[in-house]
Length: 165
Image (tube, rainbow, N blue to C red; front, side):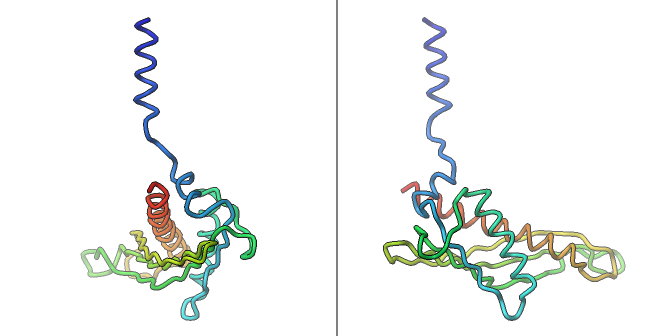
């Protein structure tokens, strides 16, 4: 009897309250989501990187189906507001050896009932470069990938909190 009581108590404590963020987001977004990423005219190459990354994370992290606008339960329109690279660390000769990429994204959520809201997020990523060199395309892509993933994680957190209410 004591064994059953301990097992029940352990199961009760462990099972209390955890709900995955993807499940919480489904309450807010629905099953089918239309995802549109606006390409920046000033920075089209980086916008394409962000498009690929956000589509991938929408499928992998939230498990939502990306569909056309007419069959969607909700729509998400993403715009890259700003992308900055700030020098963070200098070597003894004064050359930059570490940068911080900061990416600002704006998410416009449109629900089936016509309601619309705007969520602004920010992601950042620190990366090293060789002294007296420029940021390579590969380093730039990795920085954008990680910063946009962080910004999307912030968006998912906000959506999950709204789904909890």
